[in-house]
Image (cartoon, rainbow, N blue to C red):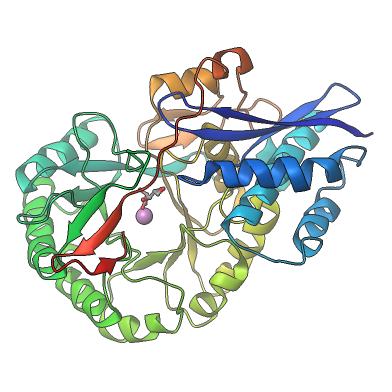
Length: 402
Ligand code: EZ4
Ligand code: CO
């Protein structure tokens, strides 16, 4: 069995997605997501120039060997561009293998460990009152876990707050939008949000929050401590994690569960965080961290310390990643939760999929493979539109973390 074609499909049904389609000499094909928000064309070039020529003629059944070839063979290891390209190949090859076996992907991984995948939705509002209403709306939709973000008085364009009633979509302009950040205002505001939320919805709903890399370790420790009365399911990305040891300080000061890792690419990015039990949930996901093949290594390593998974699932991860992640989540023994920002109807139409939402859970479906397709004719109607993520500055103009 041989790979005869591998093509890169770029489409923008409301936002940009990069998809790799691998075709075999037996007619079976598979698809993988290679989207890197705001840097899509870098991965397109990496795939077209450096990966596709390696794939042609290879045996698609040799998933592990292909992974090792692309990882070790690059010499320049890791990084978001390389690892997304590897993820796209890996997911397409698992899709092919599962289709050949006539099995849903979760059955190849070891079968179902649960009936459905617990997800959390995104409730955002311009202020606390709006966020309370939005959280209540999500409760009404059946969600059992909800991430809550709100605008902050005096902070223009706070992270996580949508403009208009569309889902929050931060990559909004060809050149980065500038936002202003104040840690003081954020730290004063956020406990008030969760105090009001617990008053409104009680303690039976799981609530989550994302600090989006904005704090120093000691500020993060203070935030974690101030949120302890509200029993968060997790507090996410409190501080940038290039320095994994920084989490030792945070951990000494708070029992609020910590989640980190949506921008991690490999097990090396979280090795210390995991083996020192510095976090509770690892957010690495299929497209970010080298596909199913590598993510399961991270999850297995995390399981030693009862650290659970919490795959990133924002709208810039295509339905192909969502499908693959749901099969992974259905199998992985130390599953925690799956992020679920719904895609737009245009995106769902380009990527027909077998997964569905019901009563707070997502179900991957039973079709062979990962259950997500791409309608290439429809995809072609939505050409690429350059869009970048925003940047953030402090009030005095200092460049900060978005
Ligand atoms: O800002 O995926 O938890 N989710 C997030 C996302 C990220 C985007 C960046 O592309 O933090 O909203
Ligand atoms: Co996040």
